[in-house]
Image 1 (cartoon, rainbow, N blue to C red):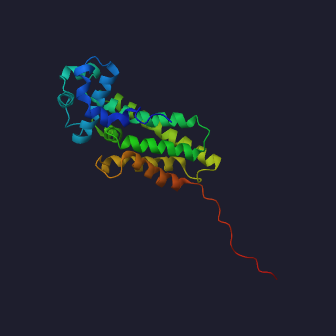
Image 2 (cartoon, rainbow, N blue to C red):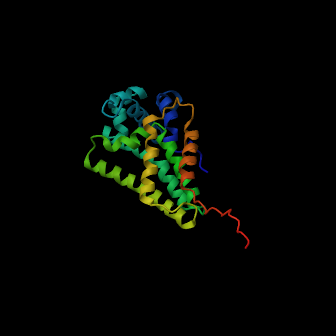
Image 3 (tube, rainbow, N blue to C red):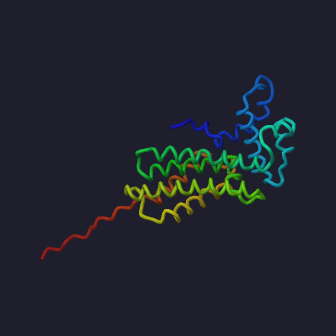
Length: 231
């Protein structure tokens, strides 16, 4: 299994809390990718806490301890910054789908792995951007790109559900409706989950695997316990 800290969505909280250090002290010459991750992670937290329209690039720059032109070096505008936050949140889910589709495990086992990474991503600082980005006043091209990426996730989940139905690990169901129901439950996490919750993101992910995965588990016909009466 890959290191759970390797995905941007799982690094978001640490990236935001340590963002100032990226430009200071011994890390002044840190590479471009690390600094860009810090910009995106800090913006994701700000959008989550204040909302997209109530957050300016000045706010992001202030949280990073840099000037606004420095932020512009990594993104062209606030719309692109929101899109990058959205894409960073989706990346671990996309990676999980690619990884599981190359696996020889059952469809349900693969789907459970995707559910786990999906729940972790939505519980991260990127969760708000993942769920709400399309609702903001974005340009037509950005909006289409977001819808395309969401559709790719949806289609990946449907494929895993169909695989599980075919191999007998998932109860026969409508893959489209089931994928929509799962995404709805997972996306709603961002509306109520807070880092201060007693259950951490990993625990939350496990709970969703238990609830959603168990609900899809193929149920074998019950064996009859009625005894035949001798004539």
